View 1 (cartoon, rainbow, N blue to C red):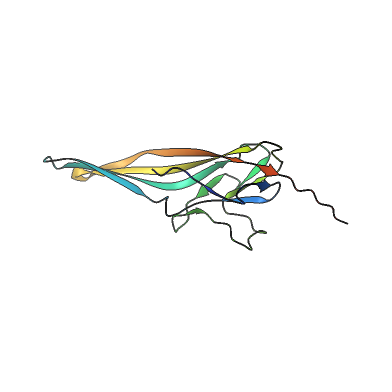
View 2: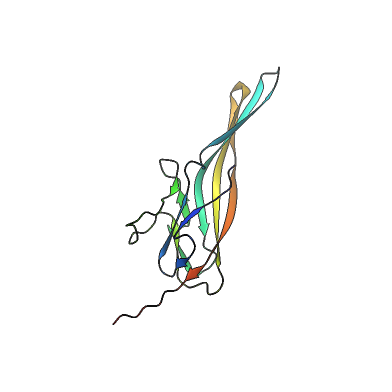
Length: 151
């Protein structure tokens, strides 16, 4: 399995009350299969794992996940989330987090857990479902607060 590496925008520092967009590169997160066989016996089995969702835990109770469930589902094109692009600043990301309080001089540990649905098929028409696999990564996110004066 490829390591669970998320992309963030803004990258570097998030800002209180502004959404942080999160996505996974669809090129790296696609179904993965492996086949094993016993030579001369006709016995073989193929196991396939496909990514199905990404669960976000912002690392603090002072945050909101987007969507509220924290579960970002896989898109029709195989991607998860949506990359931030110029002009989307006022939009809510389909996968992300909104921090409600500054992390001060520290960071929040944003945990992203990718769930893989695993199945197998084998010789003689055998096959079935295996337990899902989950792989997590933690990204340290500094969250700043911007002060402004409106006159």
